[in-house]
Length: 408
Image (cartoon, rainbow, N blue to C red; front, side, top):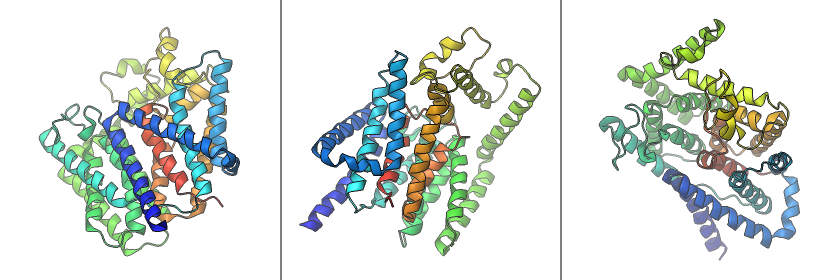
């Protein structure tokens, strides 16, 4: 009976993970419904086990995430402008709290069935390469803007980012757990190819950064590690030689950054340069507009999703331009909306979460740690982590990392 119960739990965990990923792929509406259902279940679970909730005080990451949520609520209440969108983000907090509570009460950690990840990546790799060649994918979705792959995300060119987020968990499972699996090896290599040709520059840079960090963790280089990384280097160089356009995109990014630096140094009017210059200028102006809004209230910020809802209105009479739905940087958005206090609390939460996992020394799940690390470093561009769609995949790895962390 114990074996049957464990098998059911094993299947249930993996079904939940795959269903979560499929819901994200299906779009904002589906993942929103899925998150709502899970968070409601978590609340019922808390109610049924309310006498054990005191155990949560042992978890520092939970405590600081709770302080962060409380800070956002109190700030909006004191400002008399409560934003109902905050309730959407609360679902993330409820699910994270549930995982903290469950992990504190359950010593046995059920492994991820890596073959599900292999299958998802295999399908996306085949579909993306097909779309790259024929300009439409297997279900008829057109390529975006002539050179950006979308795969099953329809008109959203985020397939490179999605594959990158699955790449690292599968990589460490392959290195530390799977003994011999040619299919997994091939899928990992083709994932690199798709990230390169997807037209998304940041996921590739995050990939390189993550691989570099992984080599620092891998103090003992096995034959498998050496073979994989040698093949990766050869593959990347080969792609750049075979497809000069792929290399040109990254060269173009470097030239754009260099041009922006020179224009700022020479104090040129950047707005007049936008038509002839690189898209890097847009990101710079997004960053700049967030900093200007942050200056309205350095310490406490302006309130939940203030940048999204008020940037255009606040800056319409100034010479500043570049507002969007978010500043394209996690930390600038937190500064703009929640100030130095909010950012400090969030950084402590992130630090506690990552350090506690490293103390667990669970090498085969370092890939989850790497995914959070490369998507959370200060210099990367990013959608808003407080939006329902991107936030669902961003915090998904927080959920997994906390689940595979054993507090000591």
